Image (cartoon, rainbow, N blue to C red; front, side):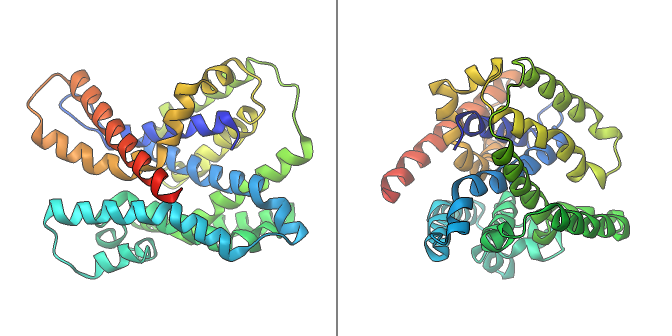
Length: 314
């Protein structure tokens, strides 16, 4: 993976972290959750296209090996988090647990299912669907297909009632595949244009636009802010940071940021459960100290999980 994009994974998983942290005078940063999720779907499409696109076209791509690698990378961690949730929460087995085991929960338009158990795992339910479609969709990445997909998205956008925004626009795998496809399209643009001589301050401008989108979030229509609001910012952000030529890229390419980027998935899958446990179990303290404690403990747990799974998969 491009070094800057690896490190950006940590930045955006922390936005998701903040969307689940609420304590005393600090409210959850809802904008961070929608932004972070959109980023990871876009980035997944972009990175997979960058790594496997040529193999798909020259016939050396092995679909079985690809799915096996994706499965081994994510599913054991998902299963570990699910078991932890069931044991700690003393949850009885029901249909929602089975759907989580099979990673099918995001297909059920009911929050009792798609946000059940380790609720953030709905993302994996959508992501594995994108993985299954990836090699077939990659061959159909074009302006024509993109236009058709966006027309379909607009139709769903207009017809869906507001009470179903989360169930359809935010969680449904078919709809989130649009983000993934945009990432694949962006990668093809990136590969055709190659490295560009962008001014170093361009990254700073893009970050300002990102911050502006987070500020505007509460004032934007609930349907639009699920993803389209962030497509307008995140696609150029990924494209610009993939050039690795700006002031911020130097910081993102440091060893510490690359290390934190490698913890993004265990951090993502464990953070909400750990935040809930710590807010209930830790003694009362000031908000900044509680936030720092939650971040530190979540990072330590994620680091330990990363080490264990790295050795097992090796």
